[in-house]
Length: 263
Ligand code: PGA
Image (tube, rainbow, N blue to C red):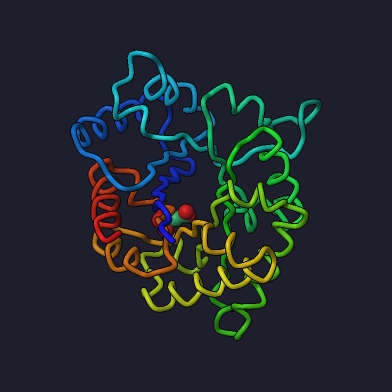
């Protein structure tokens, strides 16, 4: 089963419109003439979506610009109305957004998002034909307490509640151990592969063998140019969700190049 790896830059609350422009110009000049067997995605803050869309998806944007997809870092579970500070899925569509990161551990731990909220957002995203990048992952205490599988199983089962097989096919899962995010500590390739194989087995229990074999599962948590090849060589790892190392065009590019070369 060949799955095209997907490398997504999660900029978090970094880069306003002008820094976005600097990054994209530099990234595009570095990728000129190169092709990768990989999908490339950038998730900027909401405030930079318009500039990013202009740089990548207007008629004047170059050929390699069109190859980059845009993701949002969140969306509202509501359509419209009195929800101060929220952004709806239909608004995101106007900025050529194709993916939306949902359930990131920072949304869960800092902003109190629950499996139920995340599930509602996944359904809302699919109504607008956005593809969820659905994040799951355990804390260090959960792993050390022997609860890794229970935690992942609950997050997957609750997050994907009532999500159809058709919508699952448009979803990417990102396994991000919380203890590896922004810490410089990466899961070993073996730890990551074991967790990914487990996630795939839970999808197989819920949806059957074929959807499980098809779904892409990204690894996230301190991915860098130096560890991308080893992680991406694991059979159940299909790309990466990258924070810190995707803030620089050169290191994002090296991760993609090193990670997709092994496919
Ligand atoms: P990191 O972040 O690469 O800086 O660890 C990953 C993420 O939070 O998605």
